[in-house]
Image (cartoon, rainbow, N blue to C red; front, top):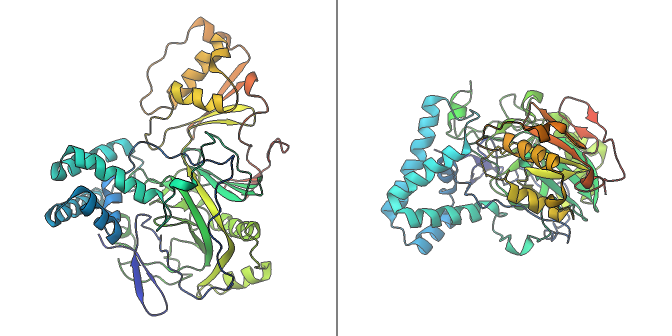
Length: 449
């Protein structure tokens, strides 16, 4: 599968990685602001990045990652893989992409666990079981870091549901939610679209260094591109074109992902991309403005309006201060006094009693102190949001519902009210932008620190 490429004014550069609709990382115009980009800020003591221990590698992801020479060199060196083995890995990865094309299944809301298992089986056939596991681990580490940088020294050990005390973006993948914090205060929340199961969003700490207005797009040789009219792989789609899926703005956050617009409101809160954070055009314009302000970048409303008015010209604004972007995977969240349990969308097996206890302990709450009814209610909510829910028979005790209320919505979330977590946890959304054109104001604002 050919890779999405980014064009400068005259030179074709840098193969794309995995966010196939447009994770081009190279700007297409000179920066508007010439201030030097500062080094990525270190996580604050109360900040954390939750990186799953479950491998994220699917065959389409591997297909994209194997286009990165540095990863290929690392795999050959550490695992002593031959050129023939590397070529075989490329062939099986591309074969999966071809299968998806023929089945028109790339954008289906399938099972990430099945995709990962299929990938490990095929890799094992080529390099053996032990090296397959090592390969997946190396690829995961490569994928989880900001391009060219290790994230090991940037991951704080503050525990789950940590609230930043600095300026940063926090994306909680299973919650379909993105938050912008400035100096520890939650400024704005957004409902987002996330990567399809075959193209899951990576997890880890990254950074935003620039905002690109009117980005161009080069379609990859990918199944979903084959279904589009008037678009051919490798052919540059100009900025402002109706065929450009990136929308008016993209914000690179390190290969392979972007935060970008172009998504219809119907895709917000759902699987919507090939490895990127998806927003509507209105959302991404609002987010870009607030991100610039939070990073102390001097760009006026008039300048932004001018950039967006000339849709055919790509403009790049370098952020005065690089803003850390946390890509978290937290399916159990104590939020503003309620326990939120989200569907395990990427089959990470996170909705377990063990994980629940860790989340509660981080808030100074013991699961052992819950009443019998509370325990049953919470465990039932966990089971309902797990990858493979078990059939549960409600007992007379749980039916009493002592000081506990549980609600479930259609988008994969259980909310359980428990008295012992009142006034604890991660802040509720602030002015939540759902992509529908209206914002939902948080019921409590004193918690939004």
